[in-house]
Length: 266
Image (cartoon, rainbow, N blue to C red; front, side):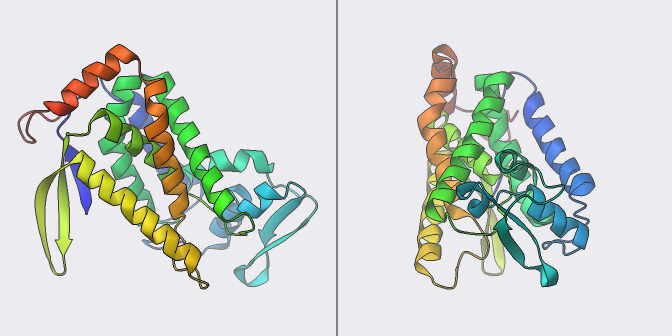
């Protein structure tokens, strides 16, 4: 399922949401040097950048350890500082602006645009950026708690965006989202309640996260599902603290009587 747009209009231009999308895109092409490949780039420059600036759970849980790219492309961790590497504490922040390919980047930015603009509209830009970053940190915290010894670079905005999704679910439970659904070789467009779409998304993250933990071969295919779970739960819990009560009540009302898609969409 691919969401395309929701039916909750915004009252002001979502400047910060647009800025986050632009920063992520620029970071991928000009900082990571990701190129136009759909899968994960394999250039030495991209891989070295990945190991240096991504969040690695083993580094976070072992402050005296640093990881680097060894010969053959493997990640090797050892005690002591690696020259030219950033301090470990900054990597959970930098990792939020890194992606593993165009599909990874495009999917995250699509979700951020559809759901982020309404959260920014409710919180305002200052509260929104704090909420967004804390969501990303909460996502990383759960991922590290689940796999503290994983020497795997963890990247992507999806943990922070999961926090946005959790906040959206609370504020707009009956908003409707135009969704592209693939059924084998066929596809169709359908409007789904946000509660159904996001609830289904969260359930899949829980299931795949459990299967990943239960599988000795690591069945997640490189996806940090528990980061998504951590961000989403943070968003559900924290949105009421960040949203001013008057705006929250107005947005809740808007979420219950949002106009049909196609008549008044942003």
